[in-house]
Amino acid sequence: MATALAVSPNRTELMKLRKRLGLAQRGHDLLKEKMDALVIEFFEAFRKIQASRTKALEQLSTAHRALSNCFAVMGTLETVQATRETKRELQIEISSRYLMGISIPAVEFGEVQRNALTRGYSLHMTSSVLDEAAREFERALGLLVELAETEAAAFAIARELEKTKRRVNALEYILIPRLKGALKFIMMRLDEMERENFTRLKRIKAIIEEHR
Amino acid sequence: MSFKIAVIGDKDTTTGMALAGATYAHVHAAKDETLAKLNEFLTSDEIGLIFVTHRVAEELVFEFRQMMRTKRLLPLVLRIPDKTGYVPKVDELQETIKRTVGAEIVVKKDGE
Image (cartoon, rainbow over all chains, first blue to last red; front, top):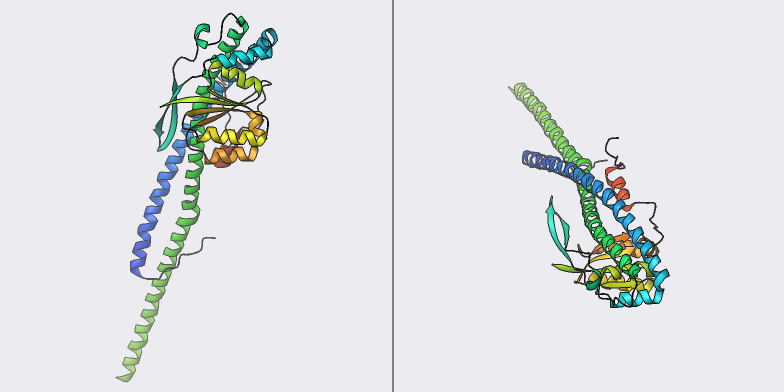
């Protein structure tokens, strides 16, 4: 499978190849360690996701129920009208942190929950079920933002894991066997040359003795 | 940096999220329109987080996946269930890991 590299069989080449093989092996070990660390990180992230996902999704379905209730009590058009009046300027802070050389988003947000007065819709035109729905959705949004953060991190780790795995495999199954093959080839060739030389010398010695 | 939130989904989801303070919302109707909108959201420097309902994401399958692969670090994109609580059976994260590690991850509850 591993086709040998095209090398000329001499000692310099042999030394060069040995150096390359050493480097490749060291790189392989390092990458393998990185991969193990990434797997551990991924486990951590995955566990976090599972915990926050169930919580967030439950909250979201509660919010949807509250909203349906609101549609029923206030009417669809009125609810939509109220959303038009709502202040929609929730801000989240996103920075990035580094984990094993991958940049991972870190999300921070202030208070998602607002009270009925700061939401912006007019109070005397709307029902309390709208407040309820808005409150539930704010709560859900907060949880979802957290979930988004962990999920983005997990995806980033997974992508990096894929890349690292590919590199490890390339080294392990392609480059290192090829280098080893080339090394073997050179060594055999050098041995062969030595044997040839030996017989040649023997032969010359015999000829010289004959002529004496 | 401060960022805003965008939502793409059905009427209920966008309404609810708007109530909660999400700045941009798009109600999915036609595929082309939604794609254009999604592209706009993705290239905007103002938006840090986009919620897309699973149903919409599934309708845009190929293009959506393509966009996810080529997008920058920000905005983050999170797929959420819609009113009916619809979540696809196949977990994409689970799939990626199965492909790379060659094993599925099952998280056990504490004490098991």
